[in-house]
Length: 369
Image 1 (spheres, rainbow, N blue to C red):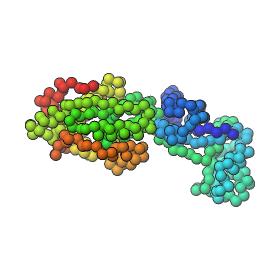
Image 2: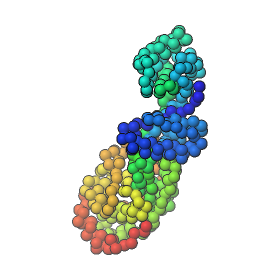
Image 3: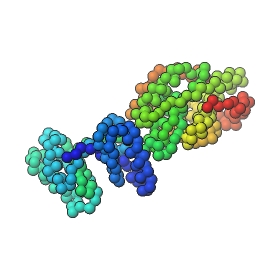
Image 4: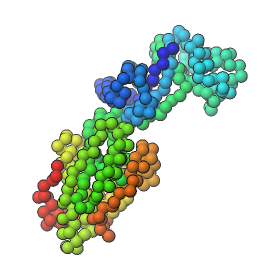
């Protein structure tokens, strides 16, 4: 028997042949990038790995749905190989078992017929064993593909989604809090390569926010190893805040700040050829994320703004952040924004906000990108 890893994907299989081949090549390249000493072979619907395979790394490769360590033999040796595999995998410790067979190719038997034959063979070798197809103590999976046969007893779930990069590149506004890393991760899962951007608001945020964002990026590198946090410093808000206070319009501070961030992110995205911006906004979660205010924010961006968390509640976002490993770094203590007004606007008028920016000359202030 030869041991190797069987890697499965799902959505790629549903694409047209040209797209499937292209995306499969991207997936293989992504696996090779994180495990360079691995030998990779593919066939329709399956990828085979041999050599230095790290399951902890493989399960975080987007596009991989699941994988198994398999024993490979020729179909003609199935019966003898099956008994050897059963002994080596601890079948004698089980009370009940089930055989699961998948088959690809033309054979003189059906999958059900071969499952019955294999089950009878096992029962003869282990007389105390009983068949239980619903909830067995031990499952043996047999995949027959042409003249080859593969045995395995464990399926390791992976992150799934689409191969990283097949949909292009997006700029993700990263604050270091819980929401924005989850939003970036969700777009990674849909095939987008992420360029994280931290907008450093001079005199409003301190270094603790940047350091927290760096820690969050360390967790996200498990899924996109080449992540680098880009930083843009901007002093616009500190001067704008004073003008807003003096004019009695401080409640619009957060909206003007976010519109400024959108413009910075858009400029950065255009410079690198990214196709849009990712934010962690969720409808109704804070004052700036009401339906009215999101309309005001959208107006500031000339490229698409993607909000994968828009319909999620906080509990759902926290659950995902725990699952992907960003919750702990996202909850490191950091200073809050010193510019947040006591009563922020929750249903701003787009014309009103545009008028404020025009009077302040916001559109003429050079973007720091």
